[in-house]
Amino acid sequence: MTQKLPFEALSVETLPTRLGANDALTAKIGKDTSRWKVREVGDGNLNLVFIVEGETGAAVVKQALPYVRLVGDSWPLPLKRSFFEYHALTRQEARAPGSVPAIYHFDEGQALIIMEYLSPHIILRRALIEGRQLPNIARDIGLFMACTLFRGSDLSMVTKDRKADLALFADNVELCDITENLVFSDPYFDAKMNRHTSPQLDSLVAELRADRDLKVEAQRLKHLFAANAETLLHGDLHSGSIMVTDQETRMIDPEFAFYGPMAFDVGMLLANFWMSFFSQSGHEQTDKRDAMRAYLLDVVVETWAVFRTEFAHLWRTERSGMLYQKSLFEDQGDLLGAEQALDHVLHSIWTDLLGFAGIEVHRRILGLAHNADFETIADEDMRARCEAKALKFGRHLAVNRRQIHSIDEVNTLAALIERENSI
Ligand code: SR1
Ligand code: MG
Image 1 (spheres, protein in one colour):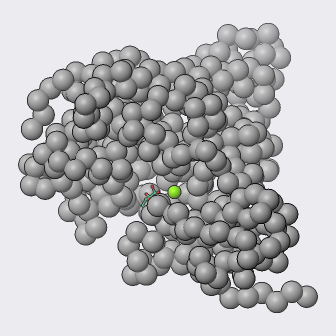
Image 2 (cartoon, rainbow, N blue to C red; image 1 turned 180 degrees about the vertical axis):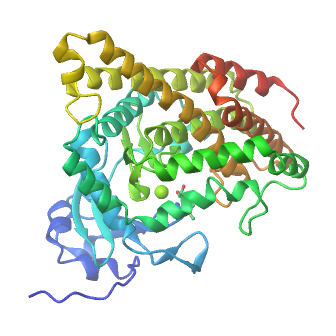
Image 3 (cartoon, rainbow, N blue to C red; image 1 turned 90 degrees about the horizontal axis):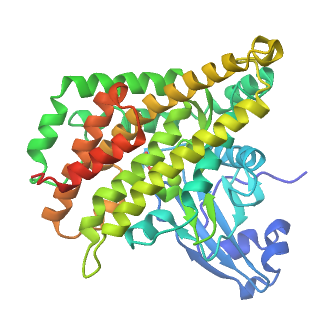
């Protein structure tokens, strides 16, 4: 019987000794640990991430820490998030093949996943800050969302299996709690860990925190997030959770995975494209970013179109779950009934994704976890101007989501706000 060792965080120095006998890793990179080169590259908020290169290849070793890396050990966080990430990755690979890194090994006790080293991929957020236009992201991410969200729901799964899976992921309590507080509540009051660009944004922040309609809407969205266990979400699908080359797109980091509303992943993702849009003027130097802004709005249009088209395709070809069953529609020759129901489902996703997008924009500017799109704008007045525009945009989406009918309408609003003098 192999003895279970207590959890111990890896370091660049200890990794070769600790993992030198791991067959899955040595099969990829070679057994001679004296030739291994190890770098710690984690730039996220929670975990350690190592790139290990050996004689015959490279791999990534991701390890959870028993606390929030961004804050330190004053904020404990269970290691089991690694278990949820591993299980989410296996389901995403089954539902959207080729969209996530290959997994070589999972060690639950050490909370570590050894996986494919994606190279020459870079984080999508970084590429967008640099002004790079990736030709395939809208197609790839739109397909990923449609396949994972549809196939993880009662539209597709055997309901007994889905309920068992729902029970499994229901234990991801602490990561849901982070989202419930950091995304839906903290931005709207003077919470302890909040920060914003000050003093430039102070009056706008006070206005938003006194905005009753906005606060009610944020809580309605939180209610939806917590109570509508519709499908297995990625749970943190922002541009920092996506790696790209000009040709390829891979989704990473689904440790926030749980059963929630489909619109959450879609809304969070689109919000990150709109934030990139509003941040571009902060990254304009000699190069103008007009083409980049136009590209980002096109990406939003195409992502939503691909998502809808693929979702509708799956609805017509793979709807085998207990919801909107074919025996009520197609089997009776009622094709229009099935289409009518599809329209209702897509319409709910649409309305809710706008709300989630608005709230995601706010929390990245008012809460604890900011994003590099704005944070890397060194000139604080410029940064505050970009952020103020995004905040107004987010407020409009969250409060008026039921009155907005098309993605073009949203992009027109973004372009209008971008041209305004904000603060
Ligand atoms: C304390 S964790 C803050 C944020 O980082 C993660 O990537 C999630 O987005 C979370 O909300
Ligand atoms: Mg992450």
